[in-house]
Amino acid sequence: GPDILKEELVKALAETKNGKAVGPDDSNVEILKLLDEENMNLLLKLFNRIYNTGEIPKLWLQSTFEALEDLEVGIKVNGKSINNIRYADDTVLLAGNEKDLQCLVDRVSSIINKTKFMIVSKQNIENIRIQVEDQNIER
Image 1: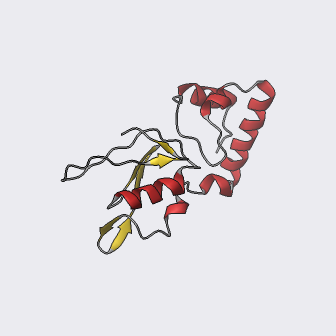
Image 2: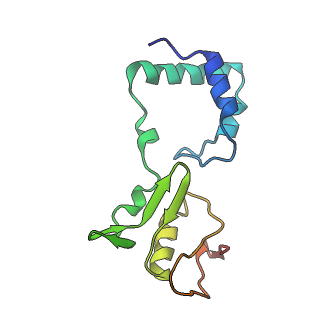
């Protein structure tokens, strides 16, 4: 198909919400919105190369949550441990107890920046502490 136009790229960046989760390269859309003319042209060239060849950089395809795939903690569903659910830039970590939840948080804390957690349980659970780098995160 035809190349992506610069106007299309500028419009797409302008319409993208700020504050979205970053990828493995820690780049966020706010930075892309600040690109000068020369760098915007380089970004456009990159996107058109991907569009025309169909070759997406491997790093872009890497999941942030590959670190959780080998863990046997989580909630059992049909005999398989499920420890996370993701939709867009939202993530839910699933664990059967505080120790397992802390294990999951430890695995992803270098990748994501979370400041709050929530417990969903049929039981009334009090006095639980989840930490990131020895700092309690808010419940």
